[in-house]
Image (cartoon, rainbow, N blue to C red):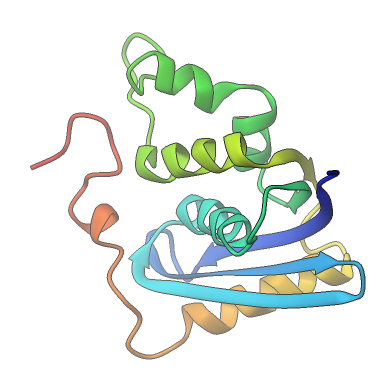
Length: 165
């Protein structure tokens, strides 16, 4: 049986970096469209970019053929150029001296990449791309929401290798 073909548009950001952050995503399958969003009281832009992709992929009920559009070179290159796989293989080290960051989220994203057949594509942010602009609006709305949950991993410093308490 062939996989369903799904397109996911994503964006994430923060008010300050770190600061209150949000992410937004749009899933499109045939004529169906689903928007999702979330946020945290203190996090980073890169964490929100990763969360947008993760939550979009987690929303899929079956293994699919997915194209993910993101304006984050960090996310797109991290997967497409194999950086995240290499960091994980090397004990979450970017090189001999530098630890990778956001290892909790990269690990989840890599696991989701094993389930789905995914192509990540970069789209220029704030350039009038309708779906990217909508994701940006969802992310901004979430980052200004009251009573955002805690990004416990970030606030406890556990997003960096070797910093677990």
